Amino acid sequence: METCPSVKNILLLDSEGKRVAVKYYSDDWPTLSAKLAFEKSVFAKTQKANAGTEAEIVMFDGQIVVYKFIQDLRFFVTGGEEENELILASVLQGFSDAVERLLKNMVDKRTALENLDLILLCLDEIVDGGIVLETEGREIAEKVSGHGLEGASSAEQTLVNALTQAREHLAKSLLM
Image 1 (cartoon, rainbow, N blue to C red):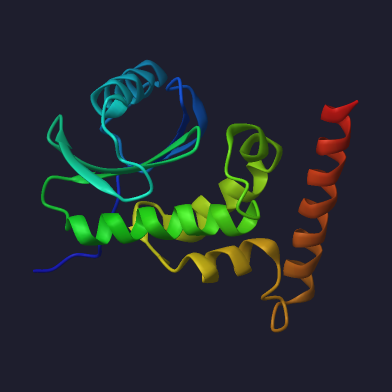
Image 2: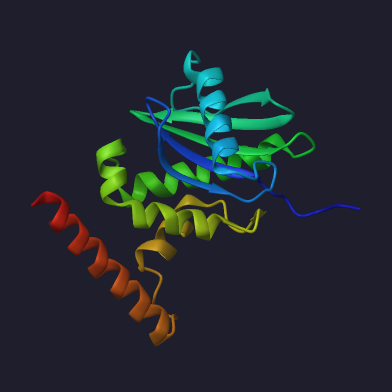
């Protein structure tokens, strides 16, 4: 019996292995300390790799980890050992493409933190409860940025407008 493609977590870490944005969909890491230990371990395992902008795959702790580096950010997608690496790689590519589009190709830690709300919305558009929903970066970015609002309800438009205003207010308050 076939199952839906799923991921266990998506991590966005900085060049020192610190969290920028993370989302866990599995109970494999039940506590915060377990999650932080996993992040530290996977960062250490891949730190010496020269992944660049192409996805690399590694088996780690009984998990498949697909990762790539863009400037000072490290993108990771983790799946079970039975998961298809190509699906995990397409999730990773969709996430990184959407982030690049939303950050207007200025993919660095500072810009990512300034637009953290958009990155977290990307994660919600890509995966829900561990089940892969979307892997096309352009589609994800359009849904997140609100450009695809032609057929959206007024409630969805209001939510997008509220998030946009909140992001602008947060950016202004951080710059002061």
